[in-house]
Length: 624
Image: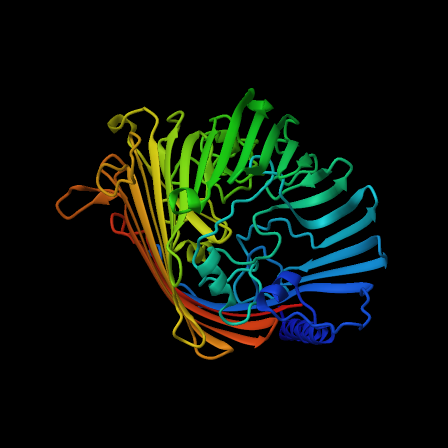
C-alpha cells in the first residue's frame, strides 16, 4: 500500500469521526438506555409541543490502533514489532442505523456496518472472517392486530433459544480488556453497574448469533402470539452456496407465562465433491414465567444430525431448567440450573459446545476436506467454565449473590458428569493469556510447537492427551467453582472499585463434590484476575489489571518431556498478565481508552511452549 493510499484512509477515518461528532452534537440524542442510566435525558417543560423526528440516526464510530511486540514466540525470538490500526477481528468500526418514518405506523431502516478501514505493517494472512456483509435493509409496520418487521442481508443478530440459535453469554468477567459490544459511559457508570448487578449494558447483539439472510418477525398478534422466521446463513455454515439454515419460533404469552415452540433445519453439501448432504434438524419447546415467588425457565429440544458420506444419522435430546428462589425464602437469592444434553445432540448454531460428535468438530475435516468453521468450540473432554454448556453431560449449576453494600460476592458452583467417555484428550481454555494468543496466532487450529493450541475470536484453548491404558474408561466427572468479589469505596467523591474474579476447574476419572486441585485430577486449572478502577476526576480514571492462570496435568496425561534426572514431565502451564490503562471521557457520548498489557505463558514441561510480549492499544469511540 502506497503512502498516498494510506494518507487517504487516515483522512477518511478522521472525516468519519468528525462527521459523527458533529452529528452527535446536532442531534443531541443517544441510546435511550444509555441516557436513562447516565440521567442525561432532556426535560421538556409542560405545554411545549413535541414531535417525532421523521429521520433518526444512531450507532457508533470506533477507532482502534495498537502496537504489539513478541520477545518470545514458541522458541522464535526474531519477531517484528507490529503496528496496526484496525480491529483485526470481526467487530465493525462504524455502525450506522438510519430509520425513516413515513407515517406513525411504518418505518424503513438501513444499517451500515464497515470493517477494517485501515491496514498495517504486517501481512493480512491467517485471518478468519466471520459474517462481514455490512448492509441490512428493514421495513416495519404497526397495525391494530400486530407489529410486523422484515429484514434482509447484512450482519443480523438472532436469538431463538439456547438449543437453536444463540451465542454464549459471560456475565462475570474482567472489565479491563475493551470490546466492541460495550457502550460509551461517563466515568464510573460501567463499574457501578458491574458492582451492583454483576453486569452492564452492552450492544443489543451481545449473546445472539450472527446471521445473514431474510428475517420476518411479528409480535403483539391476536391472542398475544408472536412469530420469528429466518432463512439464510450463520458464520458456521461452510462457504458453499447450498449451505443454509431455516429456523423459526412461535410464542404465546399468557399472563406471567410465556410459551414457545421452535425448530430449525441446517443443510449443505460436503465440499462440492460428491454432492452428499450433511446437516442437522432440531425442534424445541420452552417456557418462561413465574410460579408464585419462583421464577422458572425450561427448554426441551430434540435434534438429529447426519453426514451422508459417512452413513451417519443420529439423534438425541437436550433439556434445561432454571429455577430462581427469592432471597426471603433462604436468606439469599439462589439460582438452580439443571441441564442434560445427550452425546448425539449437536448444533453449531447454538450456545452449546460439541464434545462428542467428531464429524462436527473444527478439529477434523469430515466434509471431504472442508472444515466446520467453529474454532470457538473446543472438542473432547472440555473443562467448561461456569457460563458454558456442553453436550454429553448431565450438569447441576448453582449461582448466588451474598452480602450487600460496598462489599458484594457472587458465587457459582457446577458439578457435571459425562454420559459416555468418548475422548482421549482434555481441552482447557487460556482465560488470562488467551486474548493475547488469539492476536498473535489468529484463527489457528494447530498453533504452538506441538500443534496443541487453537485460537478463535478473542480467545484460545489447548488440548492435552490422556493415556487410555492408565485411566478408567468410565464416564468422567467435571467441576467448577467461581467467586467474584467486588468492593466499592464510598468515601471518595468519585467512587473507586476493586474486583476479583477467580475460577477453579477440574476433570477426574470419577465425579467429585468439589474441583480437585491435587494429583487426583487428570487436568486442573485455576484462574485469578484482579481489576482496579480509580477515578482521578470527573473525566479521567486509571485502570489496573493483573491475572494468573495455572493449568496442571497429572501422571496419567501424556508426557511432555524429561527432567534433568530423566523423569517424565507432564503439563505444567503458568501464565501471567499485567495491565495499565486510562479512561478519558471526552463528552457524554464519546471516550478515549488507553490500554497496555504485558503477557507471559510457559509450559514448564515443554521448553518450546513459551510466549512473552506486550501490547498497547488506543481506542476512540463515539456513541451517537
